[in-house]
Image 1 (cartoon, rainbow, N blue to C red):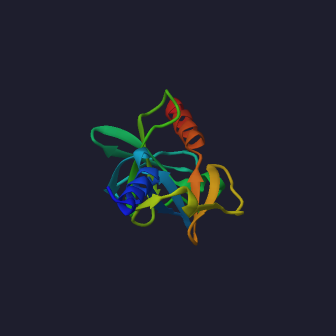
Image 2: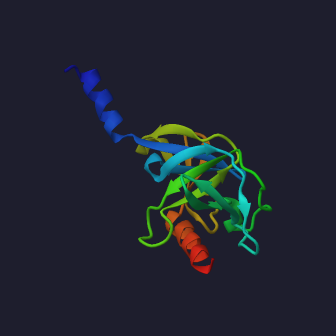
Image 3: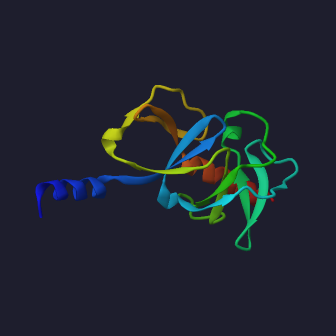
Length: 160
């Protein structure tokens, strides 16, 4: 094997496949293993007296999946009544609670391959739901605190 091919395969093995999700003026950066499926925006059944971050529930593969409005964790804008698409997330942190939840996306998510040297810490302040502010090249993004998000979803399910 030649040296160029070896370097190329080394880079491929070190790259992390990620998804950039546009939400409420932010871009979330997540490993693609967190994503079960990306589906077009659907009719969301509103949940009365829900927290600002919960839009409601959507039916997906025979399950009622809670829909999260990420900006709602930060006291952000009013709940959107629709989403361009829904990113169905696999539960990753809590052993209990629903196996899936959805993030409402305002734009189309896109796949990126990220190397460690592609990321730099951003000095942007974080609020609830954010673990780390980063830049991918010149693009700002937030790595969400999935443990925080999933705990809120679990607390919501326990109350309903």
